[in-house]
Amino acid sequence: MSPHLAEHRPSEHRPRRRFRTRANWGVLLWLTVVWVALWGDLTFANVVIGAFLAVLITAVLPLPSTPFDGRFRPWGVVLLLAYFLWDVVKASVEVAALALRRRPPRGAVIRVRLRSHNDVYLTMVAGMTSLVPGSVVIEAHRITGTLYHHVLDVEMHGGLERSHQAVLDQEERILRAFGSREELIEAGLVPGSSPRAGRLRSTSGDRVDADMDARREEET
Image (tube, rainbow, N blue to C red; front, side, top):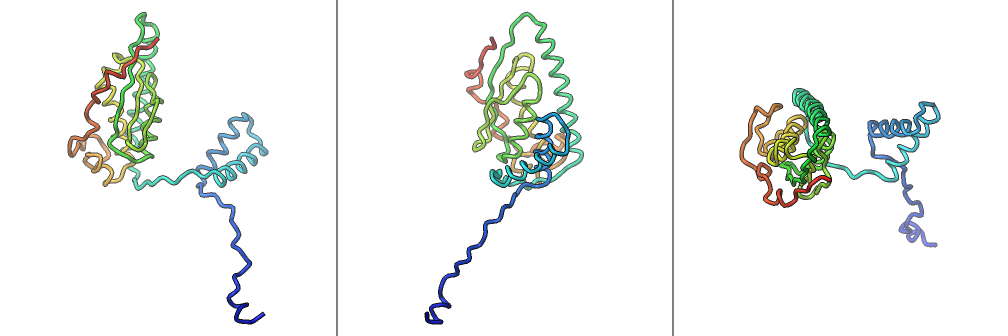
């Protein structure tokens, strides 16, 4: 074989595919804890198996990366948790009182278009809203940033407009706790950790959708 041909011959050595996981330690730890909790027995074997499965799952089935350019505001986080705990306690008492009432609850499904289009904030709003007794997000459209929010009793939640505004208030507290300055401005909010900072302008999310009444449904 000519030495010139040998020089241009493609190499038979192919780069090896590395087994890597893009998950951080927090995700791996959380998956391990979930595995141990499902077994209900804290043993060395369960911890090792859970850690192995966490690495395997995040490597074989990695979650898509979600852009997040926010920032951590301690006072905003304190306000977010304080309001959330108050909503949970208040709603728990109202639901208990509703169970003792003879008249059946009057439920409704409300469409709420959020002011932010980030998947992280959309997930946080849906999760925290669903954790409040008497309300649950039954559907979410990530492209339009829209949540379909079911309320157990319209009267208990202060009416349709108040139920609609409660979801937007939850979003605002989340943005003021974790959103960047640019994200707050884009949502029409004056940058700051407290809702007292105010708003820059009226946004499309501030109005109640026209088809809200059409999607009302009665609880059986």
